[in-house]
Length: 242
Ligand SMILES: Nc1ccn([C@@H]2O[C@H](COP(=O)(O)OP(=O)(O)OP(=O)(O)O)[C@@H](O)[C@H]2O)c(=O)n1
Ligand SMILES: C[C@](O)(CO)[C@H](O)COP(=O)(O)O
Image 1 (spheres, helix red, strand yellow):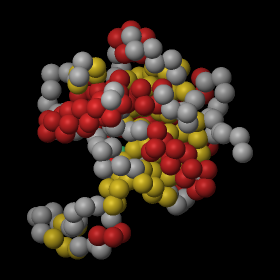
Image 2 (image 1 turned 180 degrees about the horizontal axis):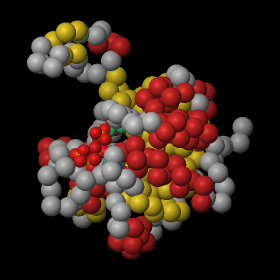
Image 3 (image 1 turned 180 degrees about the vertical axis):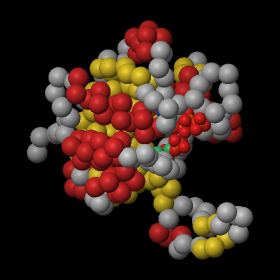
Image 4 (image 1 turned 90 degrees about the vertical axis):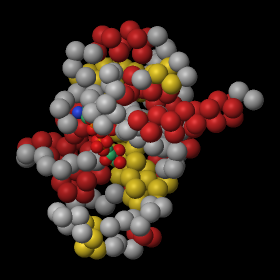
């Protein structure tokens, strides 16, 4: 069967408050290149992804074009557009940005720019799952027991661990499904929206499949994640440059 068109929306408009660094975390350099380069390069080299819409901080469009996209020849990046205050504002900006593409995608891969270890295996499994289910997100089974707590931080419930997955990105959807879901969300006052799957679950009542991501597909969030990322990066360099 023919492969359907896939567009990635890569989010790079966050402030990185939890990192507490002088520059936004996605522009911190590891092994001489910014974190966002590694993320975009996985999509650039992918046989699954046809093009990329990159969402950046307002006013950073020209700088990102010169210093990231053109410098590293990331030719699949078709547009660089400003994001918004919250992650869901940036996703909505990215979804509206799809309309400027010459050909509309069948599937949209929404990805955190801060998840630099996404790889071709994850993208391939994602494509297979979105073909089957129309809505799917990468994740991994929880290694820890998870507790639901009350406002005073007392445990109120311990869900069975085999039913708990930690969710990652890419979160992948049929284009019309995710656009309609976000259009409905933006008619409301969004509250506590922390991923795209929950927008589809809540607004469209459509089930979202979880598929296997990777324990290395971490989101660089706090300073210790940078130390972990250095180890993963060194391991990958060793593997590809042997
Ligand atoms: N308004 C926002 C908020 C987040 N993001 C992006 O969404 C991804 C996941 O968000 P997170 O890790 O929370 O990044 P930040 O919002 O930058 O971090 P923090 O919450 O610590 O400020 C990141 O790649 C981030 O750049 C975005 O594009 N627009
Ligand atoms: C979408 C996400 O990466 C799934 O784990 C996560 O919810 C993003 O949360 P953040 O607070 O915006 O980092």
